[in-house]
Length: 161
Ligand SMILES: [Zn+2]
Image 1 (cartoon, helix red, strand yellow):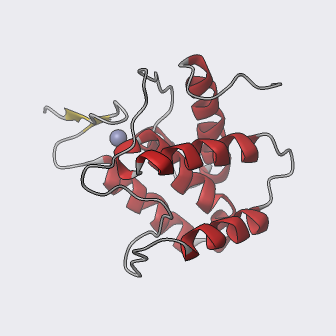
Image 2 (spheres, rainbow, N blue to C red):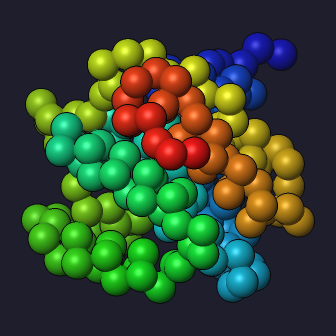
């Protein structure tokens, strides 16, 4: 059985499966148990940061700032995250009700990327493989791993922690 390697995040995927399937699987888990929604925005952020072509060039800067901000906040507050995101969504030229709305998405000729390779240690695929039971801590660990990887690659400034 041969699979594929995601060109964006490097996750090994079995045939016929992509990271987008993992993304939808996590959304499904959140829909199943509303308490899991506490990490919804963090999950969406991690997924997009590991697939930066989904962002516009400006969007990736925005996403990196969000990650740094939220990981620096000990008491992660999804409500304030929601408010911030709503504000950003309102400026989006193309809020599509049927898609995960993201404020600053890619369009032709304007796709986000990193100017150095980032070595991810956890991916959406890994979070899904760990299973739904530990979903919330898995997403928080995933987010922390992103910050470490992005700092190591010089994509976000070294922080106090
Ligand atoms: Zn991927």
